[in-house]
Image (cartoon, rainbow, N blue to C red; front, side, top):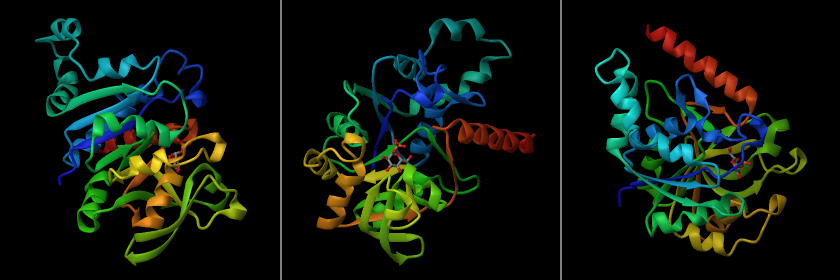
Length: 277
Ligand code: G1P
């Protein structure tokens, strides 16, 4: 079955970016002239998806307005030299349908994904955490690479990268057996371990292809790290009862949930734009 739907958990507060995120969703922070979530939607469309399922929360309405027509603005700039500035987003909107539901209480990423069940139904789907910005200039996007693996092995896939040992506490960390180059069969995964307890330095980043049985696994998952329902714990259950793959992707990932990563992404994408000129 072709994967058509992509889930965007976007209910979080973005406290690391206060005060800017007081009245503005963190997913709307710009990298150059595009908001973070638009990069995610573009990656999903490139991977062949056409339905964006967005888990929002209070104060996130700017996301819905962004993926809509702005009649007044568009009328104003029609026929002027600025019209082309909206071309890309307008074309993106015509390529997909956007659906939304709210996560009413913040109970963790697993819970946010479970809220998406109503939008996803019983089919495999992608997940993008928009504050992880991934690029792979000249090659396939990360989600597209992962879909190819899902098509081959028909199971859930998480994207991973090597991180320094003193950084593992920020991530879900996997342990696995390498089955083919850069593809690991997961044997263990731990959410945000201390460096001393981490099974490896292979950290999960914000890209997942999930099979729909993940919803039942989440329902059975008890609160874990920080008292939250963790997707990492639900996926460990799927790994123990079936198969989950971890994939060391081609490309570059920026942690735009941190000010440092955000600035790095901005500088990197700016230098790529400059080179194009
Ligand atoms: C979430 C996941 C974690 C993963 C990370 C990637 O954590 O729980 O396993 O490594 O995303 O960005 P968060 O950063 O939302 O706390």
